[in-house]
Image (tube, rainbow, N blue to C red; front, side, top):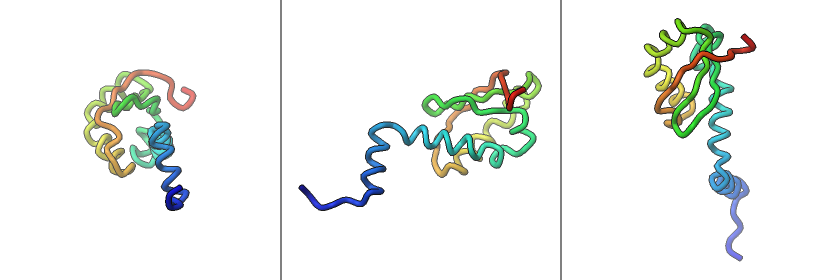
Length: 101
């Protein structure tokens, strides 16, 4: 047996092995969504999934999808800045359920 390791180190290694870290990042993104994108965008969007570095986001309507395309680079930058790492490289928008709408 080697030298005892801090519990935090052991947990971080276990998380990396099981890929829970991606789920935790996604959870943080969902939790911070409204603060990062602002209340108006948050009211008309809902993050749905992360696949690799692609974020899938539901939008409430076609006009919102078009507006979000213009805001995509800014949203990606804000999200990554809020998460403290480059989690999102691209965002794909589709019309879908948003906050029960």
